[in-house]
Image 1 (cartoon, one colour):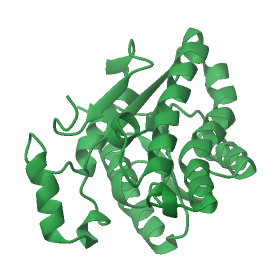
Image 2 (cartoon, one colour):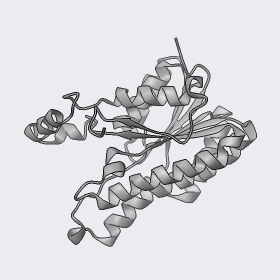
Image 3 (tube, rainbow, N blue to C red):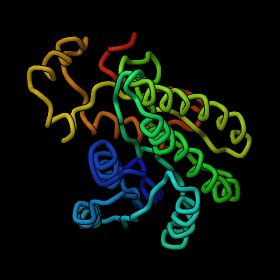
Image 4 (cartoon, rainbow, N blue to C red):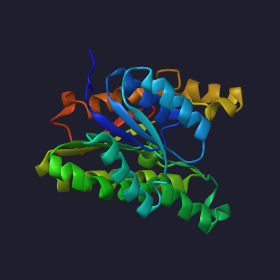
Length: 248
């Protein structure tokens, strides 16, 4: 059963990692996918081809969600290319980890800008379309770190905690127009980025998780399918923790 048949979705940071996993699973469920990427043109072209092969419309857009004007422009272009926009997934994110004593102002500002300001930019850009449609599902990617904090990640934790506060406010503001806003807070998800880490370190993390494994991009994508579909039509303002029991 295709749960997203005929729905149009925008996924920021969609060419690799969790974003790519979401794009693939969405296409399998019948969604047309517009995704953004920062610089990996080849990866974006390959993904576009792969998704189109599943019988849906797919298009990659080189766009920086942290830039207000670019976010406006992106949403305008996607609306022209796809028509209505049913689902927005704010997934673009970076890390610049360091203890506070070594963290530069630039490292702090950049993480807040890419991770948190991008959510403001994209939501602001898309709300007019969703208000007119009187429907929409916005899914914002936080993190287990945004809920419990993490040494060496003050900037990242602040950005991801900010996403939760912003999303809960949007749920209250936009709910009367049938626009839902929810948050997914992933735990330790294994992607090509974690593949570059020391295997012993990664195994240590796996052992500390009650389910004894790292999550996969598909684990996150499946939750996005639920929140983007009509199965969750009475759910808004919630934080869904997908972390294998790291935070109970």
